[in-house]
Length: 123
Image 1 (tube, rainbow, N blue to C red):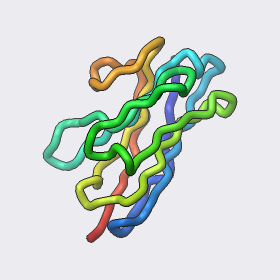
Image 2 (cartoon, rainbow, N blue to C red):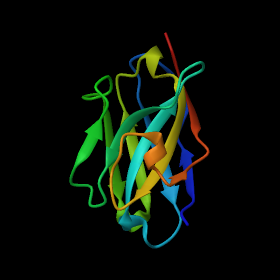
Image 3 (cartoon, rainbow, N blue to C red):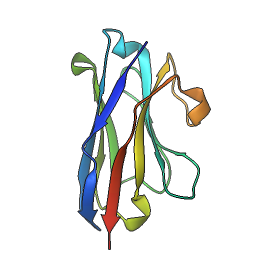
Image 4 (cartoon, rainbow, N blue to C red):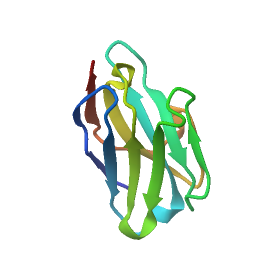
């Protein structure tokens, strides 16, 4: 059982930056691949980024690659999403997710989810 709590969301102007954090419970955090997803009003939840258990390999959706960076600190049981050059299209609720023993890009592939944190980018 893994519990995830996101933080760091808020309101930012286009071109600005935010750093999202996700704190995980348990001492087996390193056994889980981690992902970030987002859901905007009227849209389905979509993949944003993922990171392998060791943090050596990362994955991004094309629209955020080069702007967002996912990282993890297994010693702190935390995963982060640094978001730079934010655009209004990035506005959504962002969710942290955990998957046992492997990465994925589909919501259905993940085992545990946080409650989400709102990110609003104004123009």
